[in-house]
Length: 117
Figure 1 (cartoon, rainbow, N blue to C red):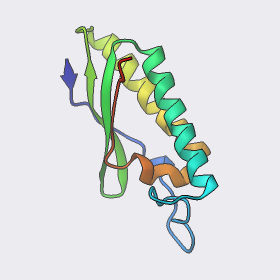
Figure 2: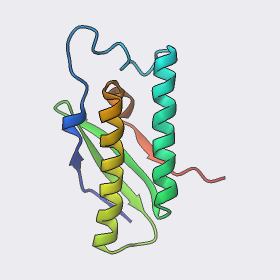
Figure 3: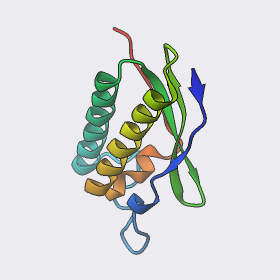
Figure 4: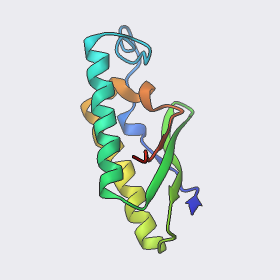
């Protein structure tokens, strides 16, 4: 089941200005950028561990705001359960961006999917 239910992560976007994009470059090879990528991976992995019904979600950008969208959940859940998972995603990403505001470029336009082992 996939629903479109967007929530903005606007308060957590990186600030613009001189040097603001130093860590925001996803292709960068700096130690700090690698640390941020690793932290993001850990946060997303923890989401999938906490929410076994969650199969994937996207983060899209519109007018310099980030939104969680295209949340995929299976099996079908109640609207309340879906809402709880959706809020968990939004809260996890917002907290991550609060700690690492330069990471917004790592999220923009990404789709995260559960990995089966």
